[in-house]
Length: 478
Image (tube, rainbow, N blue to C red; front, side, top):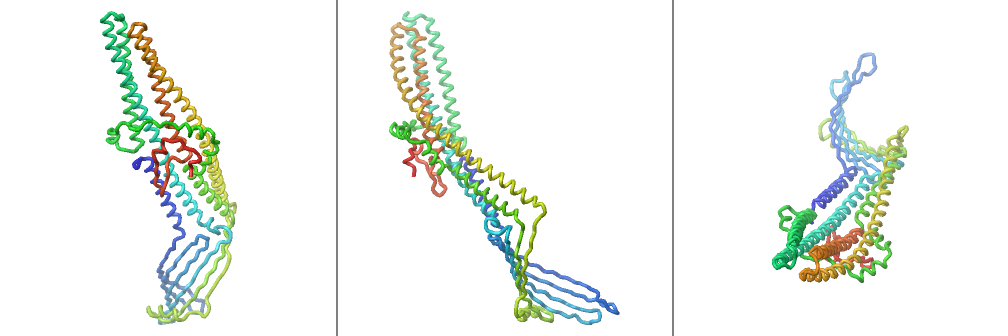
């Protein structure tokens, strides 16, 4: 099952959600910005004579920015600037070097405040990642369930072929005996036509059964995820159909159906995945409700300036020695609110609708699981009774065929009478095979429907032969 395409596809989907989760944390990474700006400004100064002031500057800065998951953002920075002042009346430049070290802080007070509002993308992606991993495990369980049921179909096809081969052999033997009886005058020659037609019909049925085996083998190989070359070399099944335990069936009949439903509620991986997806939608809904609020931010700044006249790199470095005795600071509020607020209200409407859809899907899945479990249990109890009746039919028709064959050889009955009894025996044998197949499928289906078919340890699936062939009882569940 390692190369089953549906499992591999689901695993890649899980890898994709893991990448989405990693990407969702990107807004909270530190970012660094560096810049260099060369600038020249000329400004006329009112006077009797035209005076023009010229300012040349070169600015180099480094800024770090960080958004925290609480919604608070900080931006520490350092900036060096060199100025050159010159009036038209001056002959020389007046160089000045300055530096600024500061910190900008923004604190949201309404919109965007708190982890669940700032990091909603990360929260939703985390739930989606968990859901994807659960879906991988569920896909493994589903693939195992399908493969086992296809295996039972492969076994049933082989057993049907065995029955029809034996039927053909009986027809061949009967033809040989009838020829002898015709030659001896014990039966009319016209009887030979019926026997030959019967043999041709049995050969046709056997050929059809052989093709059914080929088709069942191919389906099993596809379910296993193996290559066409490996499919062609699959051996005949060696294991027999499981025999339902009568004592376990009596216990299961006494169990309330809700006990199995509760097992499924805690262990059905697709249901657990749906719950995780709904938590993702719930997180998105809460954030959408927050975005309806106005954007009210408290903005703070704190910084020191240094100044030194003169030119050269050494002057830039010396500015740090000429700082202020106390820092510059500022504090204020900024309010932003779009008139109409259509964007946020539209997003809220969508988020609410998607969340409601998710809850409805969860409820529908629970309803489907409950119905499926009830149907599987009912079918299991019914097919076990059918097995008992079909076994009795096989035994009785086997005896009837033996008796009718003796009567035919003694000339006391016709071949058509014998053929009718043999057909009924063959039908009973084939019906018993079908009943065994349905019973085996029911055992597997009950474990799958309750989420107890495959055990998972560190996302690796483990299934035993007992899990595939025995009836699940609620008291056996951990």
